[in-house]
Length: 143
Image (tube, rainbow, N blue to C red):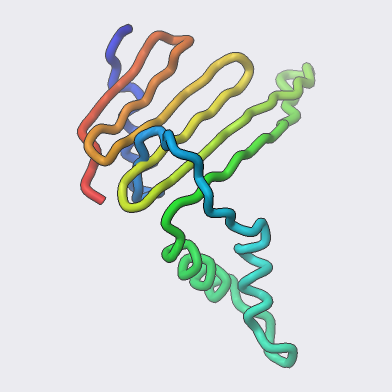
């Protein structure tokens, strides 16, 4: 396989945004986060006579909740309808994101026959595109 740094920007973005990395979580993720943990949970925290929470309050409450979560996994399947110069196509994508604190991350993205894996064990961050026969591996940033 060729080693490439074209995906390095993605790696920096991911580790900066997520703030955690993963070693392709081999063990099952046992903690279940309710689907309404986000906005609905934040809205329920308001009393019946209170004004609805502001977007900033909702984000703070969500951040407080997720700060206490040690590990989680989310599976996402989405379909997009694209109009490409008059030709309409349905594009599908499947993603799995698993995070375990303090520093493990696994992100698998599969769409239209291509798969990209982003993995980190806290020491190394690897981005692998099997169909392109390319990967990049860099030292993982400190968490």
